[in-house]
Amino acid sequence: MLSGVFTPLGILASLLVLGALVLATLFQLKRRQRAAWEAFAKAHGLSIAERRMEVQGRYQGRPLLLATGKRGGVGGKKRHTVTVLRLDLEGALPPDLLLEHERPEDKLPGSATPRDEVLGDAELDAAFQVEGLSPEARPVILDPGVRQRLLGLKGHRRVSIKGGWLQVEQRGVPASAAALETLLRAPHDLTRAITEAAPALPASNAALHAEATLDEELPGSEHA
Image (cartoon, rainbow, N blue to C red; front, side, top):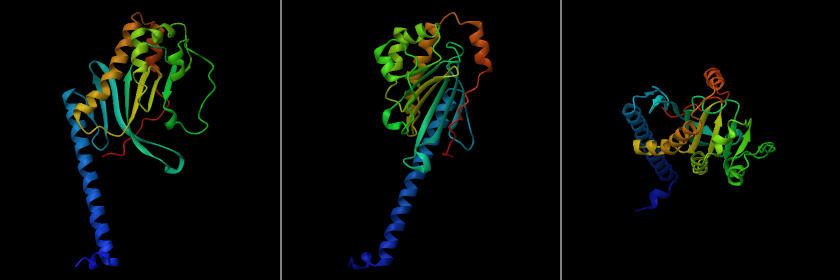
């Protein structure tokens, strides 16, 4: 009775059914993701792009960008989807400061750069590369509350402070509003700690930050 299943037509039919199930599952997942992002945006008065998974606006008073993108090796090898969160530090740190953490398994071969600057904290220096470290930025980064929260983000694919923005990446796309809230909680706590550790912001910082833009392209979205 099962002999027909193993004929060429039977195998083809089975593959078509399996492919249809996979596509249906992916379609349902994308619908759940889209619904979750829309619910999150609505709950916080944020705007969401019509054809992209991209949310912008002020989250608890702070400028935010949340989007999806593709990361991976050259030629599409090991490419994967990431969710990228950006929060504006609003001049709390100099725009020339670059502080970056990337997990070893996510680094491209040969991408390591020589370490010319250090924070003077063994654990932070082991986790982060730093450039453009100024005397006014060092005590903010070494503040106990900032330090603790920075180290708490090491599990993310990538964490960086660049051009006065905090950027955090994680693999995958959250499919619930609760997951999005969880994604934002620790980075938002870090931005608040940074602001509190630098209460007297130099006027030059604010002016430079107002003009600064990230030279890195926005992640872009492959999820409609």
